[in-house]
Amino acid sequence: MNIFLTNDDGIDAEGLAVMARAVSSWLASSPRGAGHQAVIGAPHTNYSGMSSAIGDIFDDATVPYRRRVIEGVANIPTFELTAPPALCAIIGGLGTFGWVPDIILSGINPGANVGRSVLHSGTVGAVLTGAQMGISGLAVSMQWGETVHYETAAHLAIEVLEELLDAPTLTSFNLNVPNVPLEQLRGVRRARISLAEVVDAAGPMAGGEPLGESGLLPLRWGAASPSIGDVSDEEADDDGALVDAGYAALTPIQGPRENNDLALDAIVRSSLARLSRHIEERR
Image (tube, rainbow, N blue to C red; front, side, top):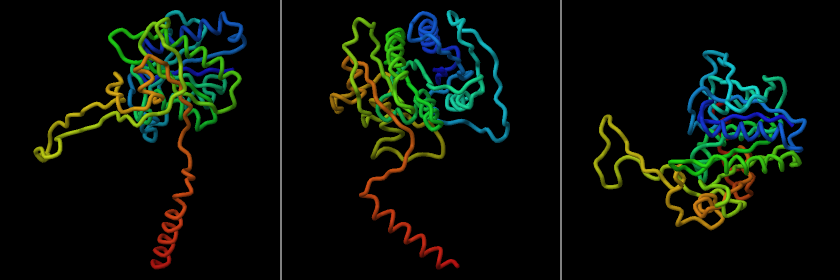
């Protein structure tokens, strides 16, 4: 199995270093790690909140890179790429580093990626981009705190990684971990993506002053912010509520696909008929 490691916080992020050291140790000492290989291709700077953006690749069809060394990770080639995480995933997924990966391992992100923040997360975006290329993936995020217990998330990530060895092709997971030492973790649960918003208010509230020609719009972070926030309106098996309760939350995810809800069929047919009439009238 070939593993491609990346993140959205940049090559120098502590979470990536902890994950890389865990994978390095697994490759070197675990029977399940024998015969597998890994490479790291991470952004040169922080690209948090960039989702699956790949940036403007049309003005310059090159990506600067340089070799790096992460302390304690001598057995994994490491590259700093001037690219957001999704583009890093594409570059790795095309076999640029000598082989096509079987798994993209993204993180560890400092801050949970739960609720609708999943849509905006660069950590998750790298995995979903890999999925579009037929590559399995695991996005790993950790509840925020002044001191982040990355080792807890790394331990769980290696366990899921071993499961992915035997999983069907194109299996993608989002793993969110509470910020506690491993011995204080209450357990791991399958989670649903909650409806929590990243931002639940912006600018003047209703009835306030109208917007001027320019200025600053204040944002109010919702329950999907890195600190989790208020989860009182979530179900017990929603991802944010589980992490807030001390459980790691594992969620199967998938990238964009057709909405085949039969309830939409009538709207699709009427839209097609309207468009067809419009085309005929213009001829």
